[in-house]
Image 1 (spheres, rainbow, N blue to C red):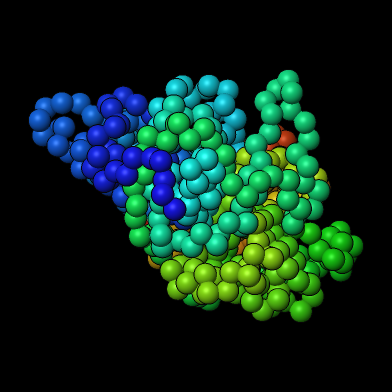
Image 2 (cartoon, rainbow, N blue to C red):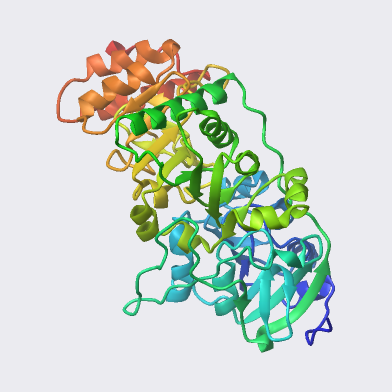
Length: 498
C-alpha cells in the first residue's frame, strides 16, 4: 500500500526532535517499544554535545522499554527527565546519580495526567506500529501502554512501521479511552474477556510527520527457570489461593489474577497452573509473559487481558505461527484500562506482586534499595494492591548470599502501606495479615516468612520494643539496615546496645 506520509531514515526522523521537547514513546516493557528512532536521537545528542550545544529531551513511555530506547538515551545523556517507570541499568545509574530527573508514579494515572496537561506539552509521539492506513488508522504491535494517548495528544507523530510484527495483529487490541471529569462515565468492562473499544488507534493523518520502516524483534530477554526458592514461593502462593477456595472466600470458579513480571511471577503462575485444586483461570493484568503462554497452551489459563505481550523471542515466534489460537485467548488494552481501580475492584482481581522488602507490620517497599537508590519504580503494583480482592506480596526470605533479610523492622522506603497489604509470601511460608493488629502481624510475619537465620534479630527487636499500638522505636528501627551499610551484613545486631 502506498502511503501519503514522508518516508524517513532514523537520522532524518531524529532531526525533527529539538532540545527541550517532550516525547511520548511507545512501549510497555521492551514489547512494542520504538527502537530505531530513539537510537538515532541518542546519536544526534552525542553529536550536539560534542559540538558544545545542549540537547536533552523529556521522555514519557508506558513503562520500562528496551535498551535501544532507555539505555541508548541514558548513555548519550539525552534525557532531561523521565516517567513513569524504568528498569534499564544505564538509566537507573543516571537517575541515582541525579543526571536524569525521574518521578515515579502509578501507571494507571499516566494517560489522564497527559490529557489533564499535568506533564506539559507533548511535542512528538514516536510509536512502533504493525500497520498504518492512509486515513490514519494505526495497528499497534505487542503493547498498548499509553500509546493511544500519546498519538492523540502529541503535536506530531513519527511512526516506526516494524515488519517483524505481522499486520495480522489487527484484532488483538482493544483501544478505549475514557472521557475526563466531569464527563467521565463507567468503564464498560464487567468480565475479563469483554471488549469495549476499537481494534486500531485513529488519528488525523495530517499529524504524521513521517514514517520509518524497520524490521526488528522486541528486546525482551528470557526468564530464568524456577529454582528451589522461587518454586517454593510459587507453591506457597498456589496453596494459599487453593485454601481460600476451599474455605469459600474465593468462588469455586476462581477470580481473575494480576501478576507482576519477573522470575518469581513466572514461578507463581506456573505453580498455580499445576495445582490440582485451582481451576483454569483468567488474568486481568499488565504483562502477558512466557508462563502465561504456556498455561494457555496447556488449557490451564482460559483468557488473559493485558497491556503488553512481553515474551521471549522464541515464544513470540510460536504465537505468530498460531495467531488464530491466541486471538481467541488474549486482548491488549491501554494501561489506564488494565490498571484501572474501578475495573480491578469490580471484577475481583487477586493481585500478586514482588517486594524488595517487607517490614514486620506489613508495609512494603517496592522501589528503593536501602531507602535511597531507585531500582525500577512502583509500576502498576499500587493500582492493583489498593483495589484487589486479595493483595499478595512475594519475596525471598534472604538476599545477597544470605547477608540481607528482606523482612525488616521498618521499611527503608514505603510504597504500599499496611492498610493495602493483606498477604505476605516467602519460601518459608505465608503470613495472612487480614484482621490482625500490628502486634499480631509482627508475630505472623516473623514466624511464617522470615528466614530462620534472621528470626533472632527480628524477634529481639520485637521483644525490646513493646510500647504503643504499633510497637516501633525509630532510633532502633533501621539498625539492621545500618548494620549492613557498616559491615556488609544485617547479621549481628544487638538490640540492647542499639
